[in-house]
Length: 403
Image 1: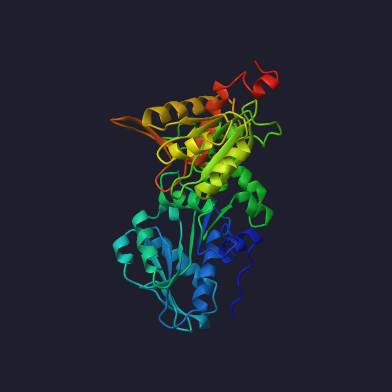
Image 2: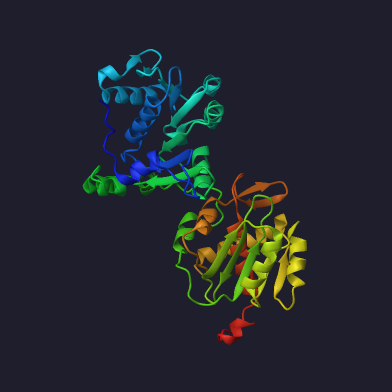
C-alpha cells in the first residue's frame, strides 16, 4: 500500500497545493530551493500520485539535465514503492503502474527528442541546468492534456530561463505559483541540522553558500544598481507625507505604477494596477492632488498627461522616455541607491530593480527589464526621484521647513 512520504508544510504546499495570485490552483509551480530541502523527494511523490490517478498509456515525465541524473530519481522512486505497485524497464527508465500509466525519466540534453508525446504531468528537475529549448519542448507536450508541471531546482545565476520564469511567477503571473525553500526551512522542519548549514557557511565562498543554501542567485553582470546596494536601500513604508510623485503609465499588458517619496527620499505610498484609462486618470489625479509629479509621456502617455493636466489645478509634468533620457534618469536613480539617499519597501519594486539591466549597442546604452518582464516600478521610482530632486524647497517641502 502506497503512503505519501512525510513532507513539511511549506514543502507540501509548494508541490501539492500551489496557488496563483488569485488563490486558484496553479498549473505551474516554480520552486527555487537550496540543497537538501526536500524538493526532489516531494516532487517524486507528486509525480507518482499524478500517475497513480491516471489511465492506461498516459505518459508522465521526469526531466533532468542529463539522463544519468534522471536515473537517480528513477532509482529513488523504485526504492520508495512496494514492488507489487510497478513494473520497471531498466533500459528505457520507465515505471509502469497497475493502471497502465507510465512514468518516464529523461534527460534534457537533446531537446528535439522530447517533442511529439502527450504528457499528463511533468517535473523539470534542476531546471536552472536544463536547456531552455528543452523547456519549450516539454511545454508543447502538455498542450493537448493541459497537464500540470512542477519546475524545481537550485538557483544558478540570473541568466537562465528558470530564473526568468520564476520571476514571472513571483510577480503574480496567472496560473503560476512561486516558492523559495531555503536551508533554514529544512532546519526548522527537522530535515537538516543547523550545525551542518553553519559549517557550509564557514567553509564555502559566500556567493556559493548563498546560491546553494539560501537560493540567492549570484550577481550577474548587467544590473546598473548593484544587488547589494538594492538590498541596503530597503526600508519600511514611511509614515511621512509624499513630497514628490512618479507615475509610469501602463500600456498594453504593462502596469500603471505610482510612487510617492517623502522628504527623506523614502517611499511613503505606492500603487500598482491595470485599469482602463477612464478609471486611471481620475485615480491618479485623486491620489496625487497638488503634490509635484513626473508622468511618463511616451507614446500613449502623452494624451493621458494632457487629460491629467486639463483636470484643473495640478502639478503634473511630463517626461519623455528616449534612450538618452532613460539612461540619464536611471543613472541618477543608481547614484541615489548607491548613496543610500532613497529607500523603498521589499516588494515588486525591489524585484524589478534586481532584474533590471543595461546593455551596450551602437546607439548607446539601453536600460530596460529583460524581455517578458516589467520595469514599471523602476521607472516610477526614477521619475519620483527626479521630481523630488527638482522640487526641493517648493510646495510641501517649504511647509516642512526644508531648504
